Length: 189
View (cartoon, rainbow, N blue to C red):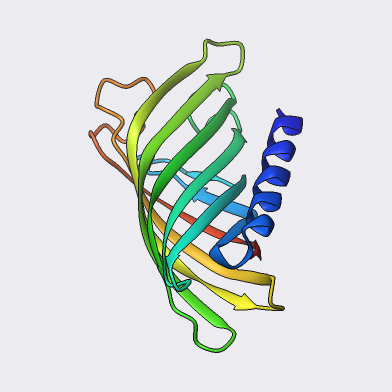
């Protein structure tokens, strides 16, 4: 799995460099807070990363973005029952991004549509997993370092998922989960 992800990151970075001024690729750390309902003591999948790429159509201001994120965590016994639980969340989203250039500061905003795969495996138990429509809406701030590199100071996203009430991974009991992510990373453009 790690070799596949490393290959994917290298290809994305190489592709962005090849089409220089029209695209950028970012990768880095991703924190996910899941809507697990009332009474949960720990709702965060803290071990995660993201990779996103944007191809700009209008003067580096309006572009199309593709975003992949992965988060995982092992919850201790007692958080979600009597045994420990390994949880994984994958998300893939696409949509428009708008970016402003104010000196070295580059604020941006986007709305991305896609799907989320969530799985949970209790210790010694059967894997529970499901896929659902999801939406990411948010923005962030990149700070230019050089002409080809920037630092993503922060990105915040509201991440809505639609795991139905009968889904085996629905933790809050409703048909919609209101999650959020916070990310930071490097941008190559």
